[in-house]
Image: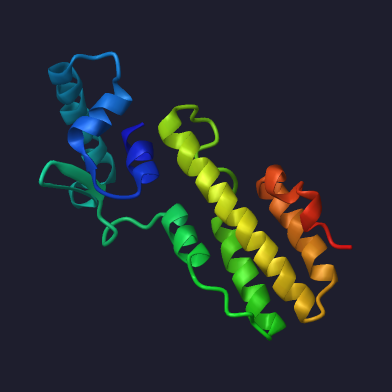
Length: 167
């Protein structure tokens, strides 16, 4: 749960905030004690250097951790350049579909996971619409339907939008 929360936060988060979110019913000192034990166990699992604590904030060190969700967010954050090349568009489609394997932490019901899940899904939906528009602009009428079929395998909610269906 600590690792999932660190990934969901995506950046430096105060130790107290993490402890509060993971153990909301524990008193402050008890939650911090459990956090310290959990952090020690997690470091043994993924490596000491993978988790950094600076100025009371905890984060995963990108020099030692590669996360598909972070790579996906970088891809989705790239500005659209209205590509003219079908090959470039297909490459972008392939890269993003390799990274997006479905909803973020789908079994986690806590608010700290549902917010990032929804944000990522919305970014994927926006990217989907942009890609379909670009593919249609270069005359690839069939690609959107095959793309939507592949996307439906990862996340049926994203592929179910009627506006995304090819005409």
